[in-house]
Length: 174
Picture 1 (cartoon, rainbow, N blue to C red):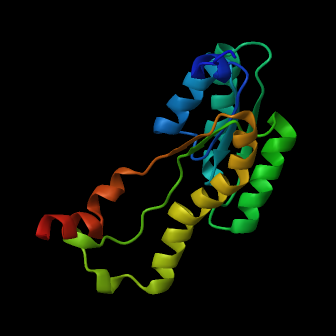
Picture 2: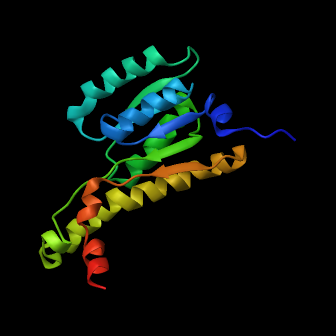
């Protein structure tokens, strides 16, 4: 039985990266492209389309000739849009072998910098859906293929805003 290393596996992998037009998402896309991966570049804000186009050009310049790249503009606060994103990624670059959920939104400050009572439940639900629910759904959609490949790689990031959360305040108090 031969063992495949992650780097050997990644040479043919399809990667879905959400929140991909700046910062860690963009840097990760470049790293995967250099390794030979095909990359699905997701962006949320319509104003990021030009950044996504530039990123695709950069990825093509540093990648192997058989890697594929595609741009996906999706509202990840909507579960139907998440399902559509996954279906379009599968159609255009193949089933994601690697998921990098790098999206999220910041809401009103709570914890040491704000008041939890100032955050309406509807606002909290929207933040949870965007920051947690859609990442969970993407994992549900991607993991069955990953399991079949015997390589489950799902990476979840959080913004620096997490450092200002209610949980941080609770940890300091107890």
